[in-house]
Length: 241
Image (cartoon, rainbow, N blue to C red; front, side, top):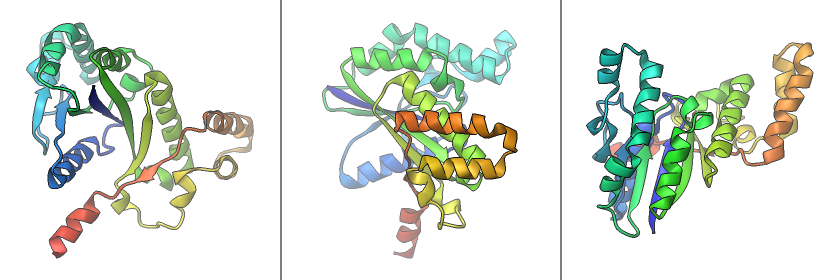
C-alpha cells in the first residue's frame, strides 16, 4: 500500500510553502517523500516535483486557445486531468512502490474541493490504486482576526471534509503573522458558544437565527479543529545557529 496526502485550501493559504517545508523536514530526517503539483497555473515552486500537471495541460494554453478566463480554464484543466486518470496518472503512479509517500499540491480554487467532483474522483482513483489517502486543509491564520471570516473558513473546511470523505487535518498557517497570540487558543478547537457570542456581537441582530444555525452545523459534525503551524520558526532558528 502506498500513502498520499492531498494538500488543499484557499489560494494564498501557504500550500506550496507547506509542501516545500515538509519535503525539507523529511529530507533532514532521512525520509523520502515525492511531491506532485496539480496546479496547471503554477510555474515556480521551491521543491522538486516527480509529477507536474503542466506536462499534461497548462492553464495558459487553455486560456489562449479556448478563450476561457482563469476560473473556467482551471475547471477545464482539472476535467482534462480527470479524463486522463487511467492513462497519464496511472502510468506515473506505476513508478511508485509500496510504502512510497506522495504529496499532492492542489490548486486553491475552493470549488474544486467543495462541490465539483474532480478532486473527489481523483481521490477515488488513488484509492483504487491502493493508496491510503488523507487530506490536509490549510487556512490562513489571518482568518482569526475576524470571527465572520473564521466561520466562513470553518464552513469551507467542513465542506471539503464532507465532499472528499477523507481522514482530515486542518492547519492554521502563517502563524508568524499573528501579532496577538492571546486569543489563538479560542480558535484552535472552537467552542460553539464562544463563536456564537462573537458572531452576534459583530453582526446585526436580525442575523441571530442564521448565526445559530451556522454554529450548530459546525458543532453537529464536531470535526473542525485546527493545528497552528509557524514554518518560519525553524528557519529563524537555523539563521541564529
